[in-house]
Image (tube, rainbow, N blue to C red; front, top):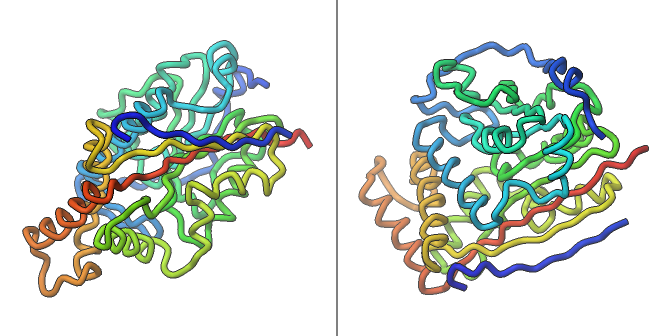
Length: 319
């Protein structure tokens, strides 16, 4: 595979917001709590820690995805974003809103909103250097997306499969559809887990990840990459397009190295949770844990492991 990402496609084909209106949109969230982003914080729903290491992992993930797809979006919205004044929502924007920042600089006439349970840029205003066409909201998505019905021309969500409990997936999707305008677009992107061509230890690693974040429920698969298109078709979206690119892990040059760094950082950030689940006894030992994950990653070179990154977009029906 090398640095040539393989591609497979499947498709089925079946407005604008004014600037003043965009600026006047208010979130219905009333939460005003603060948190020290340097300390690990685990919410009831979101298990990943709020640390600088996790921030760096998310930023690296963003630039890997941007590199392999050579763009930040897949939906056919270049003209709308560049020449109109659309209103855009990023669901799960992350503590530093990296995608939002990129998009806002690329499309200064659009208004971008980001919602997440962690918003370090709101908690630490001195770090907030986002463009003026960005709006951030701190809210728990398990309680709903805090915007009125039919607000956004384009709703984007990426790499959120581990953020939602299995039983909440249908609710989250209904919220995404609710806040999208009729004729507006929804785009989602997720990895297809577990990776393909795994060795036994690497397969066990991802089984553990699934069990921690979703238990034994198979409904968690509904936010896995290969199943994303089913959501849009369930809500009768039109102009649905879906595809994927395959990303090597630990082999294939710079892309394989970046994917390794992202997964390794994820495993290290979750080490206190995963340590006993990987069969390790006693108190947490960094050397023992590192030796185990190194062994798992070594299999990726031998087995030529890869991950399919799926995307889908579609248009909400007018009625």
